[in-house]
Length: 122
Image 1 (cartoon, rainbow, N blue to C red):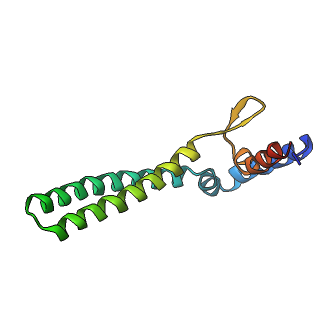
Image 2: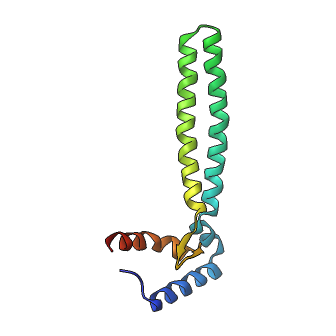
Image 3: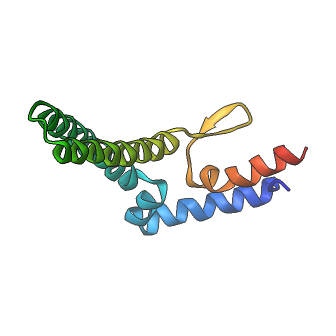
């Protein structure tokens, strides 16, 4: 069931009050710090992936099977971490859509699961 206009206004007022009282908490809830951390993880995973390629190639050139397998495992683990981090940043970058307009406030992010569920039921 979607929220009424009065409930939406009350939530928006609470959001504004939170931003005024504790901007750091509001920033954390919006996901700006989480986005940066996910981007750092994705970059580090990319560097580890390239290092894994190097280790795997060194194992292949030196005909040392265990080193090649270790390089492959490093590549696989870093790709998994990197893709998970990228999925997290892409979903955090997409603002929710309300009434055909993009809106990226906390209220929209918190309300989007209920809107999606309501849309699926209709």
